[in-house]
Structures are given as structure tokens and as C-alpha cells.
Image (cartoon, rainbow, N blue to C red; front, side, top):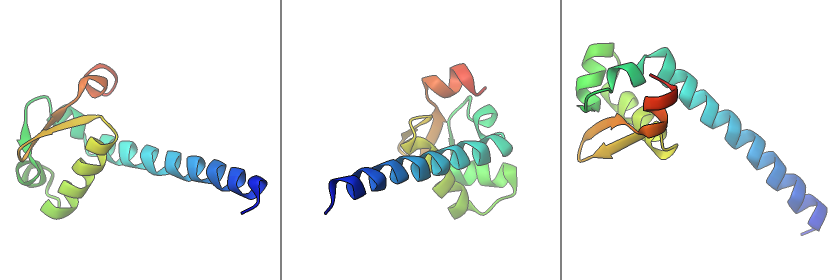
Length: 88
């Protein structure tokens, strides 16, 4: 593969990945996820409070966890240090 093409592809992947990450954070913020996870909760508990689909809520929480903004212990989620400092 052409070296220039590889570099262009890598740059594109960084841009698109940044969009996905920011979209996940914005969606979590719109649902006040960080405010609600000052204490540990399961996806089901949170979905009940938010009146959202439990599976979709779990997917969102897992995405936020993958970004390092939540911690997951067992089935419960809790804000990680960056969320506590910058998002609550």
C-alpha cells in the first residue's frame, strides 16, 4: 500500500474516532449520566431512572467506560477520576 495513502487513512481514522468519542460523551452528558453515577449503579437501575431501554443504556455505559470516564465493577458503573473532575 502506498505510504501516502496509509498516512491519509490513519489521519482519517483519528478524525472519525474523535467524532465517535465526542458523540458518546455528549450523549452521556445529555442524559446526565455523570451526575447520576456519583454512586455506583447498574445499567438497569440507570435505565429505570432515565426511562430508557436497558440494553441501549448498557451499550452507552460500556462505550463511556471504554473511553476511561467510567469504571465498571461487576455490573455496576461509577464515575472514573476524569469524569469526577471535569464532568460532574
